Image (cartoon, rainbow over all chains, first blue to last red; front, top):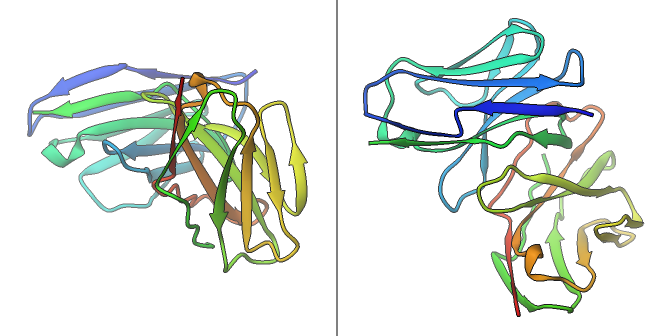
Length: 110
Length: 112
């Protein structure tokens, strides 16, 4: 069965600091991978999706970037965090309308 | 992508049946209806998906009328652990691309 790992589980970072969140998946090959962000009490915002190694599509222009260096690894990065980057970051895999989500990373930017 | 409208919140009591309705007036011919459940501090979980009439699994039932302009997620005999946010999504599962849109969902609160 498919498994999604995300780390860290929680993170507190100062404004202006860099960010690196990692997502790895098991039990599947060449998955479609997604990064979402969820602000407190809100719905999910699709940030990036990837259909293969090195293939990244950005949905929201902002100070975040994503990379997919390996088939089952998806990384979310930022060079300088903003207060508005706080939220719950979720990695998912699957097809557009049947996705499976990881445990998430809760990021607080102070 | 078809826009969906759901109630912001609902309250229920343990043991009751809960029906959450989603409106999607602009649903396209090839669109499917998908529901997710999200518990606090967890990612959403796929519950059920359907195209027309009725679909049932071990978790819920999905009722879709003939005109497909709305759908109803039915949770039988809810328990406290069904307290969660429920999202309705509509789109073409084959050619709809990857741009899924999760709205605010319906926040269900089950009371003892």
